[in-house]
Amino acid sequence: MASTVPVAYQGNLSASVPVWLNKGDNAWQMIAATLVGLQSVPGLVILYGSVVKKKWAVNSAFMALYAFAAVVLCWVIWAYKMSFGDKLLPFWGKAGPALGQKYLLKQSALPATTHYHKDGTVETAMATPFYPMATMVWFQCVFAAITVILLAGSLLGRMNIRAWMMFVPLWLTFCYTVGVFSLWGGGFLFHWGVMDYSGGYVIHLSSGIGGFTTAYWVETAAYIIGIRATHFTNPPLNLIFDPPCCFQSDLIHFFFSSPFIS
Image (cartoon, rainbow, N blue to C red; front, side, top):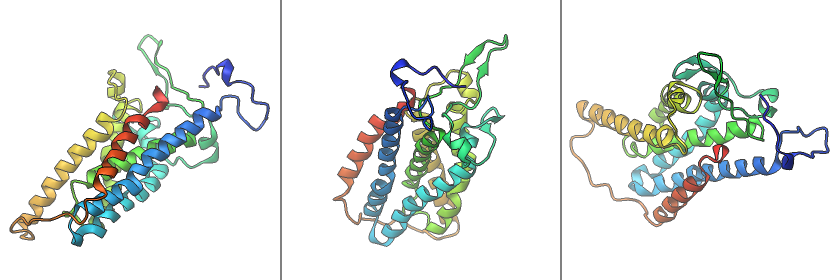
């Protein structure tokens, strides 16, 4: 599984440091993950709390905050291996925890298995960056979190926090992991050669379609049971924070989205 370590990366004198570990690669990957995470908390927490009317401000901000926290727990308990683990179905990996010390400290590898042609030759070898699996788990976690939070933008003023608390782990498990494994984790789209460098399909398309579909059915159900008879004008609470939040999110996502395959 281990890749050939470049000469420039060699020279670790400590027996406690594995030969494949490069501190620069690991540090940059963690910086990139942290900057992406800042888009969600506090970036989108502030944005969502300010674009809705005062009545929904706290609910909307906590939707983003809860989503980030819930995704972190779900991701390490079962969702990471459903997205990047061993194959269960052509579009889904086997669920399992990504918490063991031995697992997290070994060299990262994506996807979890090497893919072969029918004649036995290697189709796509595993990518083995020079940093531990713990770094990769966290890096992918912040993208999972921001995908769910982007979806929440379609539900501001439409869904309360109690319903959202149930929705987040369900959507992460049955929707997000399917797209990730299919495209990035070695699924059928990966085999077909579909490329998704910075999450155009996995993150933006899935959150956009998910948000549109969820908002449609939430609104439809609300009108059927008579909760909303008419539309109301909802002036935003405070737009001062919107430009810097949007600029920060766009800039960080463009530059720090997927350095591990560059």
